[in-house]
Amino acid sequence: MNTPALLIGLSVSAVQAGAVCIAIGVGGRGASDPVRPPARWLTVRMFLISRQRLILGSIAAAVAVLGVTGWPVAACATAAAVLALPRVLTGRIAAQQIRKLEALELWTRRLADLLVAGRALEQALEQSAARNVPPAIAGPVSSLVRRLRVARMPTEEALRLFADELDDPVGDRIAAALILVARRRGKGASAVLHQLAELVARDVADRREVEAARAEHRTTVRWIIGIVVAFTAVAVIQGSYAAPFGTPVGQAVLAAVATFYGAALCWLHRLGRVAVGHRFLADHGSGR
Image 1 (tube, rainbow, N blue to C red):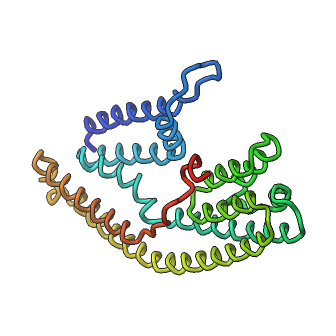
Image 2: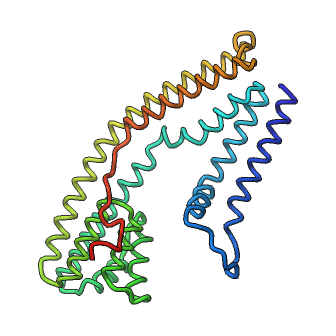
Image 3: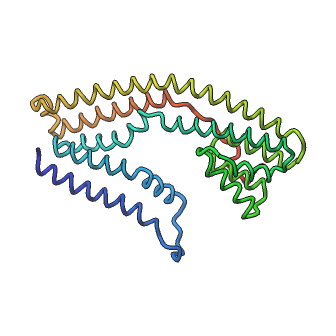
């Protein structure tokens, strides 16, 4: 093990970990502080909080690789891989979107049934939240009802904010239908919601088929990454074979190779990614 390199790596990682902790902690100011951080800073802070363990894990992995090999480029590549590969190799985001759509379908059907029973829209929305709301949309639905019941917010404005919290084109369609119901207060709202629920159900079925195909694609990517990692590990163990990478020129070559691999994996990930479409209620100041 290269002791100087390990010490350097520990020092760098300590600085990085300190920066992460500062970034997470600085935003948590007291209510008496009149200075509010900008929205961009809040977004960065929430990202750091949500990825805190992954960031610390990437730092630890980078230190371990630097201590074993003494190659700064390999350490940086390892840190980037630890941060990026979970997103590339798992279908968690797509699964969350599918669960959200399934929850919207179920909630829309319940709401349509309540409107059939002759209830007003606001009353139907409140009663729909009183039942077992699917966890995927429990937060937005609870916020919607709280704005209507407690804040006495206008129904259309509350529905637009509800669409913003869902942040999905399908959610925009449902919110737009409810906004029309709130404006016109006529009959036929239940039939429209039932038709929307049918469309959402078809969308869920289509996305499940796409995810089944993408699972095969991700399996191929896992095999490619496994082969690359295994070959790299064998090359490092065979010290004479990997010795040229310890020179400045070798580090430059390693950086180029790592960049090409990263670009190829990003390309493969983009090929398997499904666009969810664009929202049309993103600006709730328009269209009134």
